[in-house]
Length: 355
Image (tube, rainbow, N blue to C red; front, top):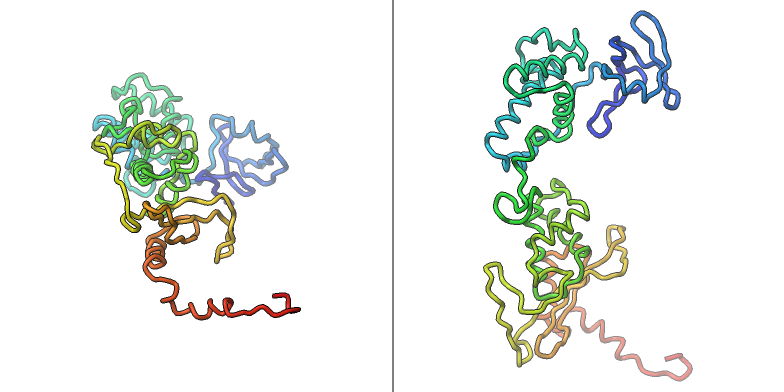
């Protein structure tokens, strides 16, 4: 059987075997939205894709159900009773799909009413609905079993949890992150904390900073939320003095509610502040990619003089801060290449030479 995978779901291709109208067919040709099917008895039929997929008995035969990766971070936030019920649903869903409560290859005896070779998926769902009703799950219909089965395919165990029991506007720990990944919530808090005392910018400008922080900490395993979700998350987590879209009317607050004490620098070098900002220009990096660079500067508070500056690709790292300190600590005359730079100062004016 020729079968491909797209987005974790089986794709009907030429050579695939499907169940349609309670019988087994093989796809022998595709023409636009039309499938050419040949049955086991030699009958052939042309069926539109919408009509084929809408059939209650439709299934791709031989395609093992693809289960989503369990979202354990969200699953653990649900109450114990909700988790136990979701685990019970998981065994029933697996039995409907492959005949075994433990999943494919788990061993055991397939009960007759859930044998994939003898009954269609719709018939197995109906049998499971009757069984769950008799077990005390309430009045379970076939559509309920189908909905739970599709939710399990899409979201894993988290899809089987009654989300009404896990819904909390402020999150389980009162952090204000709701059901967002705790790693995303922590990254947003750290970026907001790092922006204190700097130019506040906009909420949109925080997104690449949070994305870069997540990549540095977790690689590509944590996905950024959508823009609208990110805006709501910042509104929930940011202190009024830290929110980029709000004016600062008083001294910003620390995490424990205390106010920062303003400091005054009267002598050069008494206090130096370091700030990083992303420039609104495009630059060509060493690896050939194009992006917006970041400028990190060290400013003397007393004189407002820029002591050093470092230009780097997006995502300023510790080595860039070390380079910035080296620029401040080592004067230019003390550097090895300084005499070569001074050669331009030795050029004298020559009439007719253009200098």
